[in-house]
Length: 65
Image (cartoon, rainbow, N blue to C red):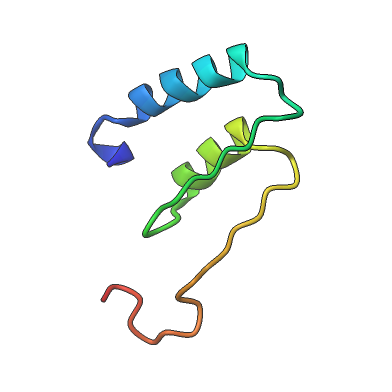
């Protein structure tokens, strides 16, 4: 969805949230079926420094199913 032009909308929403929320109380969770480098870049920009990626399909041979 981000590749289809929603990236700008997501950037705007997340920036607004960070501007009005207490950073110590804010928790942002991003979910993606795939995690290309541009999704990781958004995560680095808006999430805390120690964010982690959880790959629920790590042992599957066919991750596209």
